[in-house]
Image 1 (tube, rainbow, N blue to C red):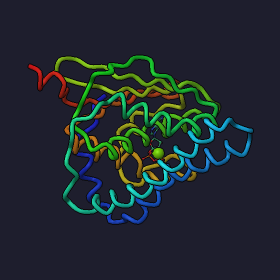
Image 2 (image 1 turned 180 degrees about the horizontal axis):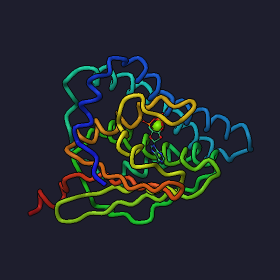
Image 3 (image 1 turned 135 degrees about the vertical axis):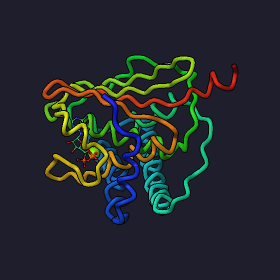
Image 4 (image 1 turned 90 degrees about the vertical axis):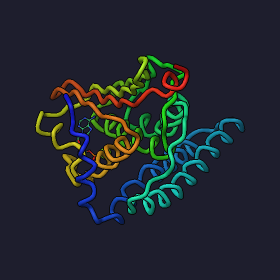
Length: 232
Ligand code: ADP
Ligand code: MG
């Protein structure tokens, strides 16, 4: 199923950047909350505590970055793209999302990983795009389940797959993905996918979605493969 790349244009109709910022700030704040709660629950080893502290600090920094990003985001100019490793960023995002997934009884797995794949990205924005998709995948499995992530590449493309076994979507819901304020959740704001579509499109990427009600959903993000385009 193919979703229009022009979805980011819908985003331009949104003037409520304050709402978008507060929505996106919830991601790092919830991670911080998760780590702080984890630290309270058990008597972790000093090494583990230091690791948690570092994660919390990282998340605070990413909250600061988000504020910056959104101020930039509100303007028509975007950050420079640089060649970066897809697997590094994916692994970082999975680490960030771990407390949230644990809290919801969701196990995250990397099922396939091309560790060499590089694409042009703004790292923070790419992380944000992925976090939004992974968060939705976790939230689609209220009784827990598995979330699979894969990085594959062909001569010309690098793809990141995020597969959940959750509630799935109807064709109409898939069609509305990325529309500002479209949300089926009680406390949802419907801005996460809008941001993701916009970021992926800025990176010259495409988003493909396959979903079946009560079966699950696969998001596939595709980008031009930089590794091969440089060496060939
Ligand atoms: P929010 O998560 O705040 O509702 P999003 O923009 O992140 O907003 O997502 C919009 C809507 O898209 C969700 O409310 C949900 O209906 C649907 N959706 C997105 N990802 C999934 C998924 N993995 N499984 C089922 N529905 C999804
Ligand atoms: Mg969401």
